[in-house]
Image 1: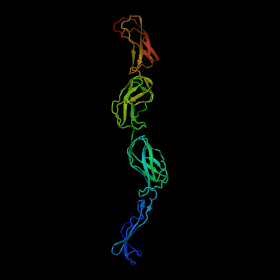
Image 2: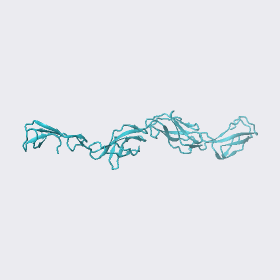
Image 3: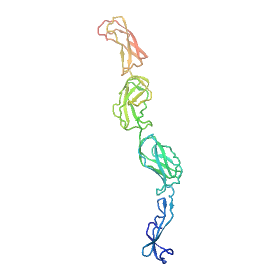
Length: 340
């Protein structure tokens, strides 16, 4: 097998020019070898030299084609950084072991991603061994690789590339359990996300925070977001049913799940204002209200003892049966200043 040019080959010459005796040496060159790795059109060039090394004639073959070897793998052209949810083209070609294009391949290939998924999962039909396929990747992240595979398990993979999240679309608010207690702190995690729920690590805030009672604190994030995420401890001071937390950056607004806020435990009893001047033996009215630490009126069941510093207050107790407040019709029989 001849692998390059200028090999010496023994020939017998009986045509035009000085005849060569049997056993004489002539030189001819071959322009392309039969086992070339390049699939293309070629021809062979032959030069005949006499004993003195003078070329006496030449010949060229007709052009012939060296076809590609069998399909070995697929090649995917370089994929640049992409944005989640945006479609983009990938160029796929069928190749032999020497990287020659296998134009006879006219099938479809499956597409997959090393993390999450890619759409479509099946390409359209190849034409002359090539396919430009439009695809979409929904999940953002680094280190993404696209792999294609045919029915006979010939494969090909892309370079490693990054899929960035899209623009800010909403805030994901962690589920808030129900009920919460008025005045008690509870943690809420706020995440900046694109339309496909990818976290946006570049979002740093700030955001405003509100609720349906108007009593939530704080009303803005007290620290910067880290990689698009912020956990904030909130307090709601007023009981509510189906309350919601609202988060906004001025352009995008999102709400939490509905949740209830119950009043806290009994903290104290409060009296309504009693006029400063009363008459001994005359009845006067006041109310007693059960309140939690945040000042919310709460239902109470039990007996509350009433006393004053004259020792003559009547009645000396009031009974609650699930009410938040009770009205007392009272009498003090001893005249005295500074009664409490």
